[in-house]
Picture 1: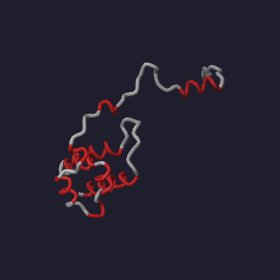
Picture 2: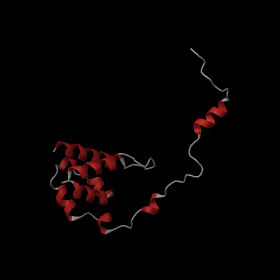
Picture 3: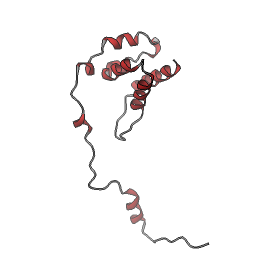
Picture 4: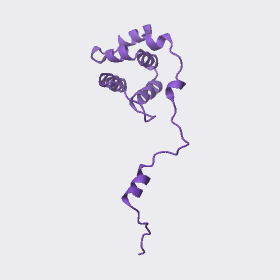
Length: 122
């Protein structure tokens, strides 16, 4: 059995290599500049959303979601009858695919998770 080749380095050199983040030429994407302009459905609950909420059990009504994020509540209402679309939306909402999102407030996250569990039980 042979020796494993290695190079003696200082702790600061090893740390510098491990802390190396990104190439200097790679820039962060500014997502806020890519957002579309807000529409009425982004700031106001639709009639379809009110109808949808009335079809689910009262104990999982997403009141915080509806108040704080009407656009997302409207999206859920519009995709609820489409299993693949709704499942994809839940994945989008619950998993940070960009690595930079702050996440929802705890109350909203709980409501989304309760809706997901209920949706999966249907």
